[in-house]
Length: 390
Image (cartoon, rainbow, N blue to C red; front, side, top):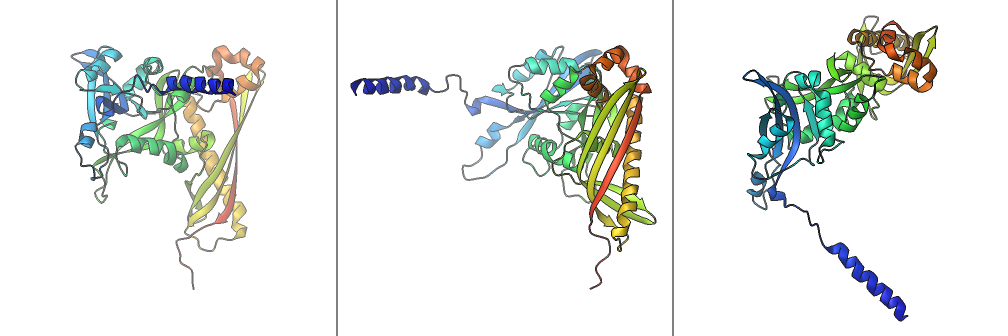
């Protein structure tokens, strides 16, 4: 019994070593918490410079509030420039009376020039930086990324929260874009068998009747990345079709406007999936893409739709989506970018055939036969624009 007590006592003493606290902890008031980072390339006096724009939580503003007064977190905007990335970040540190804390960042925004010229430099620097977060959202914009960070939040306490929530939840459900993280994008950049996309973030100028801030943000569309550089954009219907093919929305509500005889109607998609197949015949790749969707007729100018309309309506929907998919295939060839991943599929399932075309796979992609099939199902007829004759 005495031996057992000695062992227990020794165990308790050893456990005290684990209660020494966080030796490297830092007080919150001594941190400048960065929430968003925008990357730009600018010319100053004819010399190219790096410009880093950040949003930092204003902790002094929070501490000045009364204990009983509830307030939302505020962010301030700071810009640093330099010949190198590190010099640009250091120019921020010289003006901030606290240690810059990057572990709370939720997103990186790449300006158009950076996306066209310096993507690999930025991603390499991000992955090497000890405080970087591989789960940060990555977005691209037209023009300067710094302008994106000057927008005001909508229905969120900070701009960073709005971007995070929008990217994580709503854009894919609406079929306008989908989330890409630093880790996702890094994997795609090192993949030499396919191209990729980044979600497009824009400044939204409010309409006169809206009761919102003057300048807010929206995430809609994609920037097409070919061989580590931005080459073009997918917007509107192109982005919607791309989400249907490659996105994985959990609760989609993706609308398609259609014409059926003399009636206008809206087909709302709540489920979609795609299937890709590939083969090589006499040295020529052949790809097959099948898109299957399910949805409801959510709105129509014809109030007497019946079960007899289901089959012809499904045919109209299939033809509409097929037309949009084929236009997106043409856009991929225009950009010479396989953002569908056809060649990656060929590499995975037909490695011997892939070896034969790998050196010139982009030329083969331009000449490849791409067959597309669309299957649409109408599960129910929803509301109309006419009331019920009670």
